[in-house]
Image 1 (spheres, helix red, strand yellow):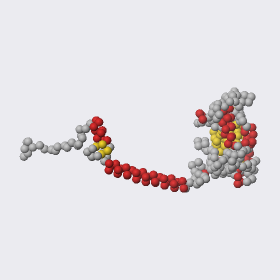
Image 2 (cartoon, rainbow, N blue to C red):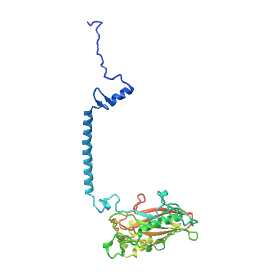
Image 3 (tube, rainbow, N blue to C red):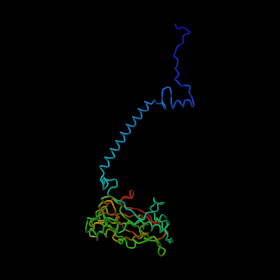
Image 4 (cartoon, helix red, strand yellow):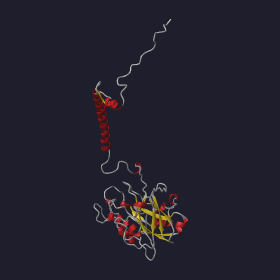
Length: 325
């Protein structure tokens, strides 16, 4: 039997400093004189944790530096590591169109022109505006890269394939489209702009021309009859061809297209691109709207052996709109 006056249970021991508060508690967090702790850790604890992280991050940095050195040692000096079908780009180039739109409308593919715009002063030195003359100015700046004295380039005629890919592009083949203002200014109230088409550069890409005997194959059903006839009479020339058309029936009837050069061809000796100074070969197409104020949807395709066209990925083609008000 337990006596009534005996206390049962334990007594809690309060920790040192339990009654500190406010500024006093903050000072003890910075430095506790009873234990020598600084910011809640003793000096030995700080030394151990700092030493650990110095060793840890030194080894981590050494590991990644070693990985980078191995990576750079495996890269070729003068060309990309992965080429053509082994690369993300592949061997099916898109088609570029020049001049580009202004930076303000860089996400647009529409060429908006005014048949009454006779202003011959660009908006600024770079032609970053929406005047007709601004398009001409941007085209002029683009063509400055086609200086016939460009370093490392030579005149080519296809007779010596040792110069392939290092050829000067002769702007004279563009005829009237190759001279300023490139059709962007109104003449007799009409604007017939010239747009330049080129293949996007892919390292070591060597396109092969389409054989005349193959133009009636199903894979070339989308090719125009005019281009098929050009290929039939070309004598199996090793060339890339450009073929443009209105995307929809109303566009086909609403526009006339003229090519410079007339055979729409890019000779194979301009390929392959292998870095350095390079002049992308061009085909110019003059767009002549039948009626003013009609929005024209135009698609231009490149044709060579094995080409694949994709409107979604813009592979092997380009699409743009022209509106002359």
